[in-house]
Every structure is written in C-alpha cells, then in structure tokens.
Length: 305
Image (cartoon, rainbow, N blue to C red; front, top):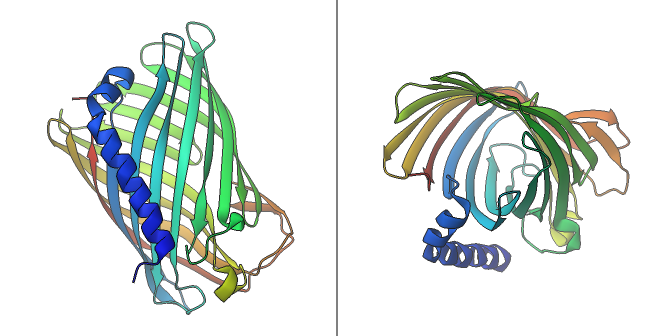
C-alpha cells in the first residue's frame, strides 16, 4: 500500500501538472522551449560475485517558465523519481524516492556571453516518516561563450549537499553542431552526448553519464541510515518523433561501475568530486559493487512543434 507521505507528494505534483497543462499555450508563448514534460521507465541489472538483483526506476519531469526578456530569463522544473531495489539483502533492497524543485536564472552579459545560475531543493528518502533531515539541496553556476552559430562553450561548477557530505562537480559545457546531422553537447566529463540526426523525425544518441545520489531511510525503522548510489554508465538510444509534439525514446546501456552503499547516520562530512571521494571519514555498513546492462524507454511532450 502507498503510504500517506507518498500519496500527498504525488497528489501535489498531479495538481501542478494539471494547472500547467491548462496554461500550456501561455507557457509556450512566454518560453518557447520544448520538453514540456516527460516520463521514463528504466531497468538496471545488478550482477556481481556476491549479489544479483535489479533496480527499476520511474522518472517524471515538468518544465515551466517564470520570466523572460531580451536580456534575462528564468524557469524551473518539477521532478519526481522512484527507485525500486530488489533481489539484494533486505537492508539494501528498498523503495527510494526523490521529489524536488529546480530553478534557474540566465542573463546576457554581452552579445556572446551569458551567466547561468541554478538551485535545487528536494526530499530524497524512503518517504516513510518525513522530517527535515530528508531534504537535500544543490547550487551551481555556468559561464558560456557563443563563438559562432555552430559552437557554444562554457565552464562551471555545481555543489550538492549529500547525506554523506559535500559533492563538487566542476565541468566544461559544449554545444557544437559539427555537421548538419552531427551534434556534440552536454557537460564534460559528467555527461557528454553525441547525437546523429538520421532524419527530421529520428535521431541516435550516445552518451556517458555519471550519477551520485543519496537517500535517507526511516528515522523510526532504520535509525536514519542512508543509502548512497554511485554509477558511471554508457547509453545508446533512439528517439522518434511521432508527429507534432510527441516523442518516444528507447535506449540500451551498460554500467561501467555501480555501487550501492548503506551507511549509519553520521555527522561526519566527506568531500567528493563527481563520484570519487577526496576525504573519507565514514565507511559503509554494507556495499554492493556491480556492472551490468540497463534499459530505458521514455515519452516526452515537446512544445517546439
């Protein structure tokens, strides 16, 4: 059965989605951005010498505008994610959730130069008994340069307050239309993406993704332990536009490295860059390391058309 905390969060996000759908025409006029909302289902195999299991996930997002002018723009994104870890030890086989709000502000400094600032706040837990310790936040900034019509680069850094400590992600951003059919984009080294446009409706994308996340467990049942999930994986996917604004995607990937760690509640502060620890003051109670295949299928609604 779905507990009351999960139900309340889902109800709140459903209401938000309905309201934004009602005003979708106004949103398009203000923002003119695609990917209004999307939904993805994923399956990830956990396969190691000591454990065999899987992770099933559901990700949903909804973008919305806040303000736009010739020189500035701001907007946000509502996100809900769930991970079902199964087949492992009961202490790690958990249902984990995150629901957060992401907001950004972008300003043009000169004709070719822009600064981009963002913040994110949300709940990351099993949602069994919500309290203040279930919240996490992230902050970051990026500076970009438009070199010409085909090339934009930049650099920036993001900071995340994780349950295990502090995480830093320095990055270089790139958006390079190499040829009319080939585009390199994303953040280096944490999410580079190479896209080949087969035709106006079909594209093929290959990317490398680095993820780091932590989730608080129940204070009453688990003594506020938390689970940390780190992975680096490659993903190859096809995206097809059905016509109008509807898009379907399907992808097959492989985890180069994946770790699921269980920690006792602690006040110690680790520091990490990407998924790598710089200073480790705490050690996991339990850990599963694995490699394996992953699969994703998704739908998104694009306001561009």
